[in-house]
Length: 445
Ligand SMILES: Nc1ncnc2c1ncn2[C@@H]1O[C@H](COP(=O)(O)OP(=O)(O)OP(=O)(O)O)[C@@H](O)[C@H]1O
Ligand SMILES: [Mg+2]
Image (cartoon, rainbow, N blue to C red; front, side, top):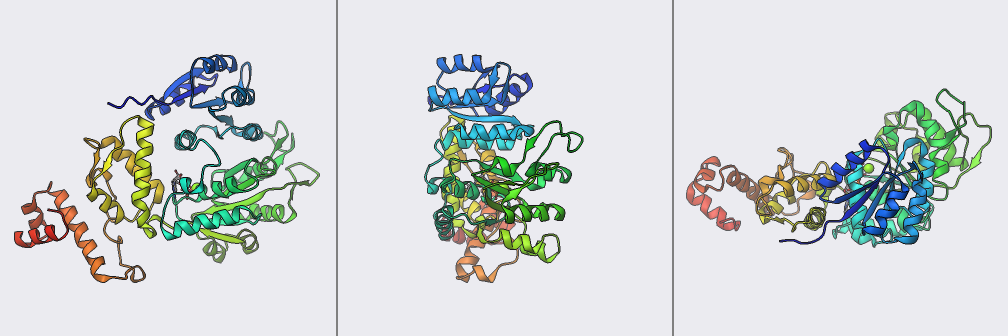
């Protein structure tokens, strides 16, 4: 029996609904949760229990989350803290990061982000942890990517991070920041696609009280709050053209003027941008300004899709399974060699994120702590050596390529027939003899 103690998380919020939501979500991650309604209760719990992580609201009845972060930094420095804050108090969140918090989330809480944050807070305790332990993969493209990140981290250059959905663009941006001289300053990731267009200008550059209905107080923008640090413009291709002009101006002038304000304020931010779309295509289609494109695309870092670095799949899978085991306090599930084969020939349209989700599901569903190919629920149409029309540029050995396809099809037929070899042979219209020969050839007997 595994007797590893569950990791403990302290939740500090005066709203019962939020506490309950966090408790349920973290409980499902097999974490032990404790609740406090205010700073005072949190401080006494911190004296009694040894926590791994504290998630705190910003506004509390008897103080602020910031005071709690400072208290934890001084008295319980091994405890990670993350802040949950209303969107319009982002500036507070920045001071919290500066005070030493690990990260922050905005309300309403996005549960996927919450789980990602908690996982990294518990597993990547120090910001300075080596890049090769955070951006995994021993394939040549990944080794090159890490080299480029380390080199670029030292410069002030704008970097355009391209890559398919779920391939690790945000992780790359974080690593550039964490390795840079700005590491102790804020890292702000802004999802351009998620902000309503009429709020973009005020979100980016801030606003003065009364400058539009709803502007009830002065508010700094993301450029000001990222001052001294790094600003990731995520999904930048989704910015409307009108906002692109204003962004270009801010980058060129290195200053911003808030909505309703009279004065330009100098800002020092390093800009990184990312999108899963092809920016060149967006420019050609007239949806993205070419002058902004040239400004942003000073250096392009391409994060390769997982199917171009299949050698990394095994290492990633084993890392993810270990993490799931740590999350659940159970022994890690083993990946059956055939399941690994199936993963290695899967197309992974959703890249590393898809692999994470797939293994999480399989880890919960599998029996006897062994993940079989069937537990992975690979999407049809993306299975098989290359998933679709073969691409000649990826084929350097026709025989090996065809054998791989043959092996995958045999496997699928065997799984479909619950490893009844006679039925599998019939399914493929092979004689039993021929089937036996092939099973032997591929070591599947
Ligand atoms: N090389 C890697 N090593 C370890 N974890 C990785 C790697 N690449 C991606 N991940 C993990 O995969 C998940 C998705 O990564 P990330 O959010 O950076 O992708 P993205 O390219 O920004 O995706 P999207 O286009 O959907 O925004 C994260 O949990 C991230 O930590
Ligand atoms: Mg992203």
